[in-house]
Amino acid sequence: MGKTTRLDSDGIWLSRELEKIEDRVFEVQYADIVYPTLLPVDTTTVGPADDLYTYRVMDRVGKFKTIQDRARDLPRVDITRKEITQRVISIGASYGYTVQEVKAARSRGLPLQESRVTAFRRAYEERVNDIALYGDTDSGLQGFLNNTDIDKLNVTLSWITNGSTADEMLSLLNTAVTYMVAGTNMIEKPNTILMAYEDWNRLNTTPRSSTSDTTVLSYFLANDPYITSIIPLNELNDFSGANKNRMVIYNRSPEKLKLMMPQMLETFPPEREGMEYTVDGYARVMGTTIYYPKSVLYVDQV
Image (tube, rainbow, N blue to C red; front, side):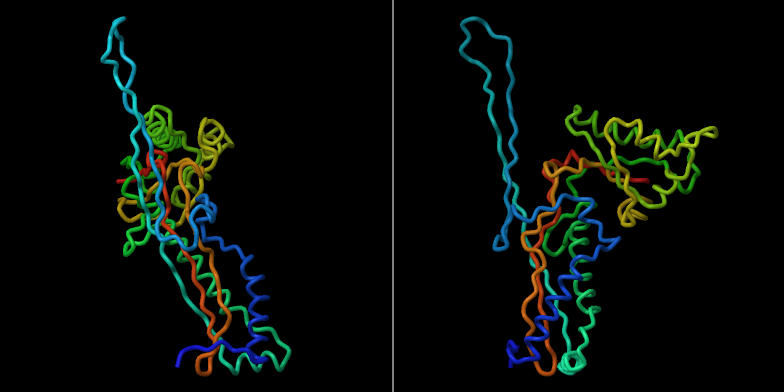
């Protein structure tokens, strides 16, 4: 026999209690759920019922040339257009309370324990975080940190293992930013750098010079014309695919990239199956969409 929705007094009480808990739990912020701070999140462009998301990339071809007064074979200027389609996937899970737990809590005038709801919400956030950063191999979704369309700059300098000087650290940062800006004819101008915590900590604790009370991190942010923030990220420690750590340099703008979330987490009324009430939940999500791959650069220590 399948699940049946409970409309008795215990089932109604449980449903109302869960509404109260969810209102509180959903406000909790987790320090290591990083996708909302790293990526613009879009919950409106793609609808919950959509299975695919297609966007168009346009470019121009042709240029003006020197011509004669009576020329008829003028060079043609035109527009090219290509379509890129990405999948939307569903994710889901459930949690439950036994009939006895519900009766005991209600009869004693006690609230239900929030731990299961908290764990449920946490599992949802972790899954979205994983998809945003690493994609989903089974579905072919690409993530922000391992997108195959992104350029890589390989460097040999490792701040942790060889005790790099302040000048060497600054040289690496400037080289990476210049690589993106100059390589795109100043079209792409990054504003954010992500790096492993151990690298960030070295930047933040190394003086600019023996006579300075300014750190390398503060000096770089104060003098670079583009970068406004350098953020430590645990996920970049010993990054898979790099010999050591990876840095990510990018323009954190919704014009450049987005995490599409067509359906935020939705939970359904409790249903009883046997001696347990079960609450199901699901969401719809995509991998990170990078409209302009040149607006992101991976810097790998090799």
